[in-house]
Length: 299
Image (cartoon, rainbow, N blue to C red; front, side):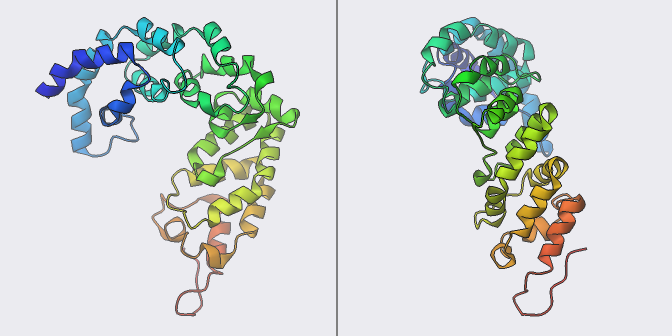
């Protein structure tokens, strides 16, 4: 750890001067020291997190967060690319330092410099995520609300931050997306649940409009990860059972034969629970096995 200890002052200076670019340059360090509970698995990883915690707090205490916030305020889409990584890391280790950091980001100044970026939001993704790490999603949530009239397209990550804005846009007929084509199931679940909490009819409408995309995502040959899928399907089923059933009914057993083994035959933790899981396993029973014998659904 001696080498990292010696590097701590330099890392603090980099975070002060270039808060959005430094996390990309030191990505593995930030990733390794975030220490989210669900990510800390095994004794070795837990020991590493414990050993690096004093170093992390030394870096945080030595960083001039108001000055770092000023760099963000006067930055641009390129310099913001890693600021969400920094913000998540900082909030994880020191919520008070995170609050100080984001409170000094001048949103009034940014209102002007970002005026051309609100229509589709993607260019603002790192900055808005960085502003929304606290449990109440502030100040990112309120900033999105303030720009609702400028937004024409709202992706899942933004819906999760400001479901009130998503509800308003839905009522105006603007485009909302659960981003299911990328199989970001956890993000989609979070967005759908947040929207349902403030406007269940809008959430049901979004899910209905997403049925084709859901079927395609479940059928994709790139179905390499079911992480978050069980949670998404539970949220979706509670939101609109008909929409989820329709998405499953549209699946072609022959197409999903190679995509679903882990989902349907894995451990109990991996399986989709409840009525939706039962429907999926019923579908599995219709998939002809390689030897042509009768298939049976997993227990």
